[in-house]
Length: 116
Image (cartoon, rainbow, N blue to C red; front, side, top):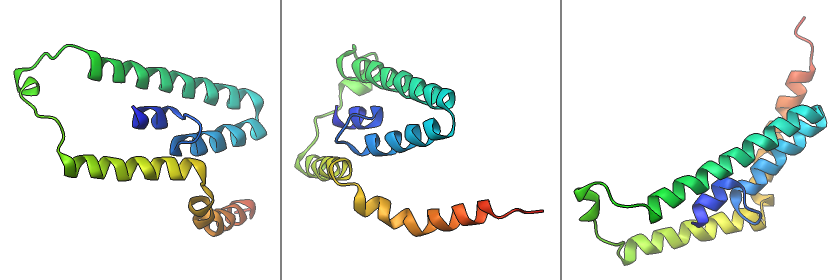
């Protein structure tokens, strides 16, 4: 559920930071483009939740899927590490955005120069 909510852009998860920056940049460029971007994010979140409901709470239609076992301790440990990373990126995104800072500034400088 945490990963589906992070995919939907729930605040304090890794997905929120990226989606917020995209919508903020789109609104600064043009309000209506930002509005369309925000609307598509809402539709994406609705689809993710619909998918989660069908996968987790839906009936099992395949006998091979019904035979699967629950996760073991090693798989749970890896999922826990990934969950901590998702929350860490959402709560403190600065180290991840700072890595991109130099390349984004160089890209903006390159795009600002006329090619004619």
